[in-house]
Image 1: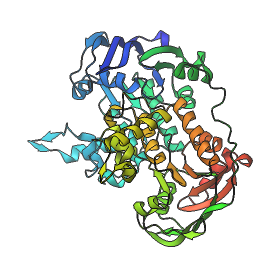
Image 2 (image 1 turned 180 degrees about the horizontal axis):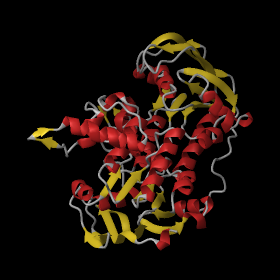
Image 3 (image 1 turned 90 degrees about the horizontal axis):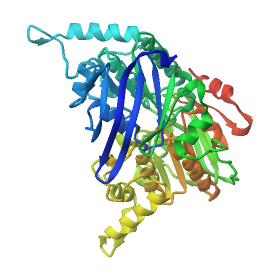
Image 4 (image 1 turned 90 degrees about the vertical axis):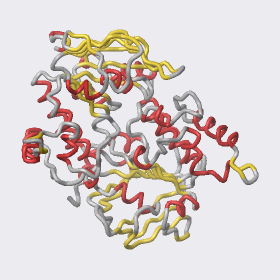
Length: 500
């Protein structure tokens, strides 16, 4: 039991504000040695901020941190790493042009006679990945790897510091089920070796699977800490959102009409290449796309949207040929796309909320020949209200928001265009249970208004909970299409492995 173990980390009275916004309010938290502490809360509740204050990325305003019996106050991440605390961030910040080995040893290259010891680097990296059961080409650039592979490399890097405590911030958001199983096996091995882990996640089934204890933050305050065996999913949800949610998903009561979008024999040249994809989506339908990472789900949406080049095939909307050659062409025809990686290709990180909300629809905000700041600010304020985005106002920098609230801004941007076809690539990735429910309601509302919706999701319960039909991708092929009410997890998994 966790309570029989000594406390390795104790946080007392931690507070942090950004301007007028108080993000942490006198947090008290204990982490036991050789245990896994789950940390949950809505987007903007303060989870990542608390860990960044611990890690030295932010400086706390007040409070104390006691590590292994000694008070510490890290000046920055390097200081924290050297004292035994490592953190794997949700948004990966890696040198994509450099190799796996280079990324592993950044800032701490071993030397021999004044020169970088590349032989030692490769041996230590090879030994580490072998120990963790991870197969990876150590010399390839990070850019050539999938998001999930890069995530596993970042976790391996944190482990390589021989840390006493490792913080994992949404580490499974881009991992397949086998990769999650491998990660959990790795975490259990580390726990058995006496290493403590703080596991930040919105996935409650994972919290109960891997964690010994769970703590919940709400609006910057710690509202609950319990052993996982002494709580349940409903109690966690109530603690997170301050109210009970009777159902995880709202009722899918839209009524699809006639076929509006027709994809015929779509293929691409470049890997992972699509091969002869054909399917239809109806007006007012929520069409799900499921499959393992690398199956071609993202590539399919990007090809329809004009980002990727077709080798063959046609796209029809409302009976008219729409083989888009660019995203602008797709947008002009009423198509919208929420991308998988918001930080890499969904956000303008140096811009404020107004810029990020209005950038895709600038002609709408003209007053004469010039853009109207007043129109843009009012449009942004409207979308912040609709999406229940936690922000001080339209002039906040997008980087000041949590990942989930950033995702809400992207939703607001596309809603300003009133799209007819709304394609979403893992739209609830990194979003808390309360915000997910609001987005599900929004998706169903759009379908009931006659919009055509395609949703890619890596979460099996989600794809089964909010769709009318599901297309399953497998290694670039469309392995099958099933009616959501008539299928189950086993059938989806079998189809996803059909062409492997």
